[in-house]
Length: 113
Image (cartoon, rainbow, N blue to C red; front, side, top):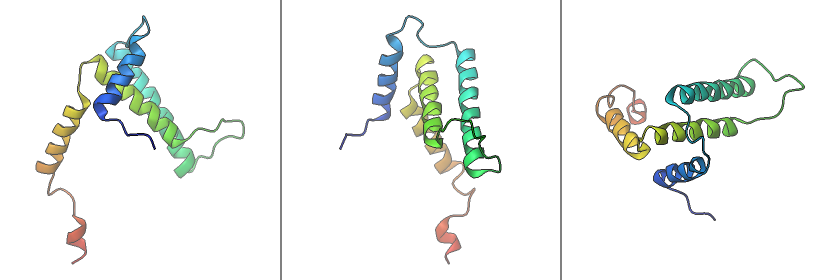
């Protein structure tokens, strides 16, 4: 079984991959366009799998997992290109959810009583 990578290791792996090319990371605007494109492809797969719009017979097979992977990769590229540590960003957002939004939703234990 392979050992799971940390988020830091994943960001470093993506950076090593991108750094081998002269073009490097795209500009922030181009990165945003790429992210929008990838999220659109994810939306299309979700609609095919869970929605009312079946695929055409001649459309290739993709998966939600593959499209989520593409979105994750572009998020990693975007963060790397802007010098953002995603572990720190994640820790900050979870702190926000656990403090500011802690009473926003109905907890499971509250509904079981």
